[in-house]
Image (cartoon, rainbow, N blue to C red; front, side, top):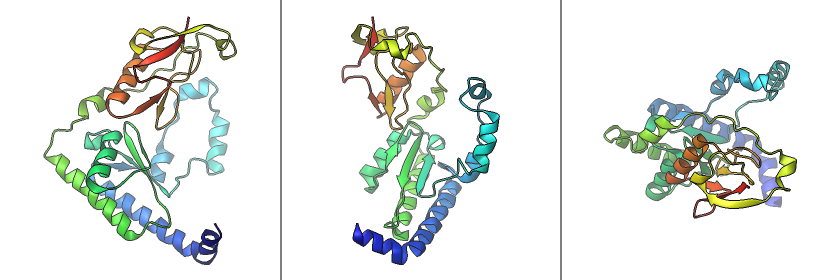
Length: 239
C-alpha cells in the first residue's frame, strides 16, 4: 500500500491522463468496428427514463433535473462497457472467446455486454491487444451466422412482477422447493438473481411469471449464473 500511495503521489496525475487517453482511444476505435457499441457519455445523456418509473415514484422530475446538475450519470472512464448485440453473440459467449482464444479475461459479462476494468497498470500495448482481439471477432463474424442471434432477438424487457406476499410476512410463511417451470404463478420465498449483473428479477414475496422463467432458462443456457436456484433448477416458493 505504501508503494501504491507513493506511485500515485509522484506519478498519479500523468498515469491517469494516459489511462484516460487510452480508454477514449479504444472506445472510438471499437465503435468504428460496427460490431460492438461502447458505452459513452453521450449514450448516457440520451438515455430516456421510462415515464412509468416516475409515476410509480421511483424517480421524480425534480430529482432527474437535480441529478443532471450534480453530475449523476457521468461515465466512469476506467470501465469499458461494450454491447455485443450487433455481433450476434451474447456477452457470455464473447467473454468465453476472449478468454480461450486471446487470453483476455474481462471483469464481467451479461446477456448483452462485457465489462473491462482499465487501470494505470494497463499499457497501450494491453489496449492494442484487446482491440486486435475485438477486431478479429468482428472480421470473423462477417462470414459466420450469428450463433446467438435468435436468443438476442427474442429477449425483451421483463414485466415488473406483482407482490403476492408482503416482504414482512414472507418469513412467517411455510415454503417448499419446486422445479422452476412449476413455480409460475407462485410467490417466491427467496431472491432470484442473475449474476452478473446482480440485479434481482424476483424478490421474496413476488409472483414468478412465465416471462421471468423463460428468461432465467435462457440466461443459464447461454452461460450465465442464477443465484436463488439450485443446480437441479429447484426454487423455493411460498405454500
